Length: 478
Image 1 (cartoon, helix red, strand yellow):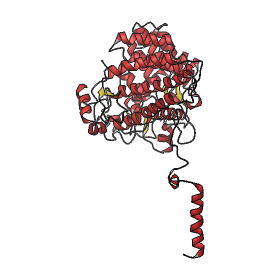
Image 2 (cartoon, rainbow, N blue to C red; image 1 turned 180 degrees about the horizontal axis):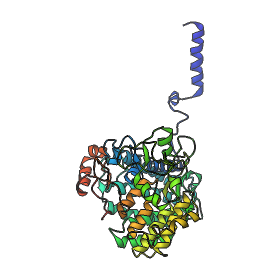
Image 3 (spheres, one colour; image 1 turned 90 degrees about the vertical axis):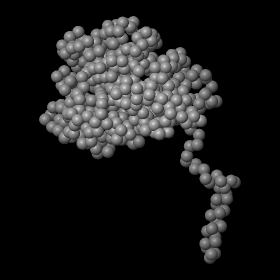
Image 4 (cartoon, rainbow, N blue to C red; image 1 turned 135 degrees about the vertical axis):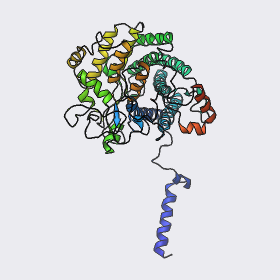
C-alpha cells in the first residue's frame, strides 16, 4: 500500500468513526420511517381503499364488466365470466385485508396509545372514522364473497382464521356503526388534513356513517325486513347525505403515484382494452340521457354506441370512457347522495318511515346524478319529464324503475352497480354469445385460501353450497 492509499484508508475510517459512537448505526437508513404515525396509516388506508374500488385493472376489479357498463376489445375472458385465468378473486381479496384493513388496525392501535392526543373527544372521533372505513371494507368483502374471516382475520398468531357467517357479521357491522355515530363529537377535531376524504370534518363522517348504515339496512330488505326497517329509519333520524357536497370522494392528484387508477390503466398504459357496453348505451340512448357525453366519447359516426357485450370489439369504432372519467384527477367515489336518495325511494315503497314520497326521492336521486356529472337542474327536469323516465309512467314495478335508473347513476362504480343489479334484478342484462362461465353472483374464494387455509375454506364453501359463482350471498334472495 503506498502512502497515499494508506492516507485515504485512514481518513475514511476516521470520518466513519467520527460520525457515530456505535458502528452498527450505519445499518440504519436515516431516510426510512421505522415508526409510522397513526394519521399516516389512516391516509394510506384511505388511498388503498379508493384505489381498489376505483381501478379498472382486469387482474382485480372487473366490476364495470360484471355490471355491463364496459365491454372488452381483444381479451374477452372477463366479460364472458371467466374469473380464474387472472386469479381475480385473490387480487381483490388481498388489498382489502393487507393494504386497507391492516393499515386501519394499526392506525387504531396507535390512536389508542397516542399520548399526544390530549382531548379524548378527538381520540374518539379518530377511532370512529377508522371504524367506519373498517365497516365499509368488510361490507364490500361480504357483498363480493359471502362468508369471510372477520374477528380473527388480522390476528397474525392465527394463520388459519375461520370464515364467519355473513349475516352475523352484517348485524355486527350495524352495531359498530351505531357506536361510531354515538362517538362522533362534531365540535372538536379529528384527523385534519391527514383525512383525504373529508379533510377532518366530523360532521361529514357522521353523515357518511349514517348513509353507510342506510346502505347496509337496505341491502337486508329482502332477507330481514324488520332489521332493515329499523336500521334505515334510524339512519335517517341521525342524518344521511343531503346533497352532492356530502359525497365520500377521494380526490386524486395530477402526478403519479397519486393519479386516478382509471387514467393509469387506460391512458398512461396506452392500452385499448375497453369500450362502452351496448347494454348501457342501448338503454341511455332512447332516454336522451344528458349524462352520455359525461360518461362516454363519441363513436366513429359522432354518435354514442357500445360494443357487443361479451365479444371482441373494434376499439376505434365504439364509444369509450370519457375524458372526464379518464382524467388523472377525477375523484374516486365511495358513496354519494344520488345513491342515498335511491335507497330512500325504495324505502318508501317498502313501507319504511323515512319521509317524502318515492317519486320525490327518485327525482332527487336522478337530479343529483346529472348535476354531479356536470349537467344542470334544467337538464334533469327535461330528462324526468319523459314518460319513459317519470316515476309514475316508467315501465315496471318500483324495483325495475329504481333499479334501472340507479344502475345508470352508478356508472364508473362497477361494484355497487353489480350489487344493486343482484339485489333489484334490473335492468335486463345481455348474455355473452359464448360464455366461459355463469353470471357471477359472487366471487369465488381466492386460491391462496384454498391452499393455505384449507379446512376453513372447505367449511365455508360447503356452507354456501360449494365455492361457485352461481352461489348467492345471504341477502340475495330473488
